[in-house]
Length: 248
Image (cartoon, rainbow, N blue to C red; front, side, top):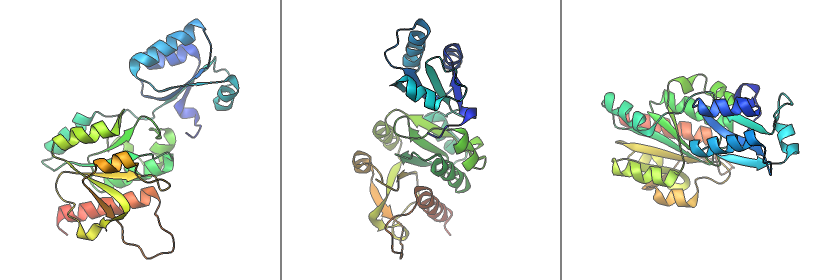
């Protein structure tokens, strides 16, 4: 995660209060092996809130610190609040539209996430779903890269992508996975309640997540390289879904 002063809270009391106040904490770094009372309190509060915690040495904390006064704990705070999955589905229902969601697997680059949220907003997606682990959260860099779209397109952060897919399938959604070996997107029906699954340009969508999808689609290309940037691929597929939904 890129270091950014706007998304960092340092110090024992400051972090404890941030967690207790309900702020969205993306990552928490605590000095490993410490039995300090306030740090133990941070651990307890983080566990109750289900916050991912990394135990690191003092050198690592010093590298992450902006103030130089971390007191053994640093928290990365989301620049925007996360939404609930049911709220996203209700937003689609209120508009009398079939749900259109984007589910991201292994997107680590904040610029990619911001660009995807921006495309999601422009293409009329009702929300973006990201995992808690192995993924960037809503940092200030993401908010900036989204050009303000994070204020309009809700982002849901879930503990388990597979369970989320199963839950949404029960609500009638179909899952389409972006994959270079998939069916040409122009030949695949992408209308109806749908969730587009995008992985990183390096490893793509993970095997277990891909197996949960209903079908794979690819973007026709004619270049010399074999993959697109994740945010570019997401944008192209988002607008193909929009085209089909609008009947253009």
